[in-house]
Image 1 (tube, rainbow, N blue to C red):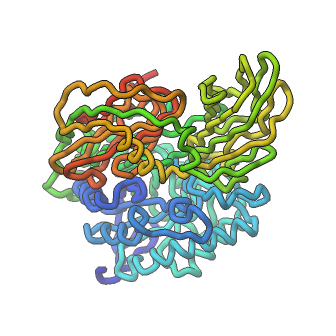
Image 2: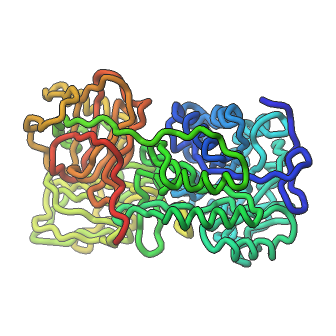
Image 3: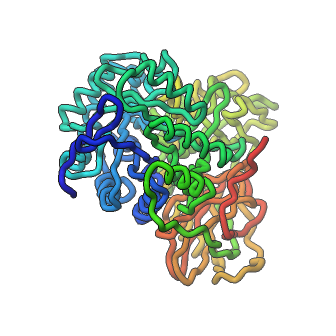
Length: 603
C-alpha cells in the first residue's frame, strides 16, 4: 500500500490529488491468465506506457454453486490488484454482475437462472438478492484496495453496456446503493456504445458515462460530449482487435489504423482503456457464445489480436501503441523481448478406452422418465450421456423437439450414427435400424453471453422423439470432467504406451481408436518448464488436459489450430497429456510446435 490519494471527476478531467490526470489503461482479465504469469503481464503493460489495469470480475468463476465462494489460485482478485499496485499502476474494477466478455453466460452463474421466474438484469427480488450477496463479496476485496486507502483502485463500474439490454433505472440504482453501502468511495462509471438511446437507457445521474468503440473516434466522442456536457471523455473499451468463434476466421485489425485511432482519441484529450491489452485464454470450459440467428461458440484462444499476444509476447501493435502513447506521456526505456520459439517434439497418442465404457466412473447416473435438461440435473456445463432402449420396426427418424444445445453425438449399441449440431440448426437424424441401446452424448459448447438468450437451459430441449413418439425411460449421467485425467492416465498405464524425450520424429503406431467418443493419452519429457503450443490439426473435436490442467476445447473446424500451454503447468521431466476426443483423430500423435497458429484471417 502507498499513501492515500484522492481520485475524482472534475469539470473537464479526471483529477488525482487535485491535478488533471489522464487514464491510459489496458484490459487484463486475471481469470484468463495463469496466476504465476500475472506479474509478467502487468509489468509489460507498464512497459507499453499504460498507467492503469482494468479487469472484469467473473461471478460464475468465483461462485460456481451458490454459497461456494472461491478466491483461490487464478481467482485471487486481491493478489492480482496487489500486483498491479506493486508495479506502480492504478486499477479499474468492473464486477458486472453481467460482464459479457465472450465469457460463459456473460459471467452470470447458471444456478442463478435455473428458475425461469428469476429475472435477468432487472429489479426481480431473487435476482437482486443474489446480486447483492455477490457484490458485497467482491467489494470486501476492493474496498481496502481503493486509492483513498492507499490501494490502486480508482474507478468501479456499475453493470455493463446496460443500455444495449434494458432501461430499468431502479435496478441500476439498487446496484449503486449496494456499492456505496459496501464502502466503495471512488467514482462510479457506466459504459455503453455511444448512441443516444443506449447512453440514455444505461445511465443514471451521478454516474460517469464512458463509451465502447474502436473507430470513428471524433464522431463517438462528440456523441458522448453531447450527452454528458462536463467531465472527462473516456473510451472504456477501445476495441483494438476482436474475438474468434469456431468455424469462422481469426480476426485481426490493421496495426496502423488502430494506432491512428488511438492517437486521435488521446489527441482529443480522452482517456482510454485498451480492450484487450492482453486477452489470454478461455481455459477449461469457460468460453461463451453468441446467437444472433446462428449459434457461434467462442474459441479457446482469447488472443484478441491484442498488443500482448495469448502467450504474453509483444506484437507489432504493442510497439505501435507504445509509440503513440509516448507522444502523451513518458514511457519506460525498457521493452519486453520478442517471442522465442517454443520446444518442438512429437509423442505417440495411446487411443482408448471408449467414453461409454468409463462414463459410470466419470459421473453418477440417474433414472429419468422424460428427457431432462442439464439444468434440471443440476449440471451447469460440460457433457451429459443419455441412454435409453429403443425398439422400432424399420427405419425411423429421431427428432429433438425444440433445439439441440449444443452438440449431440448419436450412437446405437455403441456404434456412431451421426451428429446433431445447434450451429447447423439440426434436430433430426434418420436411423436405419432403430433398436437396441440408444446413446446421446450431449455437449454444452458455451452459454450465450450477449442478448436475449442469456441464461437459457442446456441439453436436448423439448424432449426426444422416435417416429413421432416421445422417448422415455432415460438414464442420464452428467460427467465430472475433473476426473478424466486420472481415469485416462490409469487406463493408459494399464494399456502400455510409450513416451517421447523430446526427439523430433515419427512415433510408433498407436492402438486402434474405439468407435465414437473416447479417451487418449500421451507422455513427453522436457528438460525444463516452458510455454508450449499443442498442434490440434490432426485431432477432431474434444477437450485437452496437461498434468491435470484443463487447457480447453479444440476443434478441427478452426480457425484455431494450436492450444496454448502456460509454462507453470509444465514440469521438468515427465508430462502427461489427456484428450477426450468426441469424433476421430486423423493423426494419432501429439505434436508440440514452435508457436501459435490461430488460423486464416479471411473468409
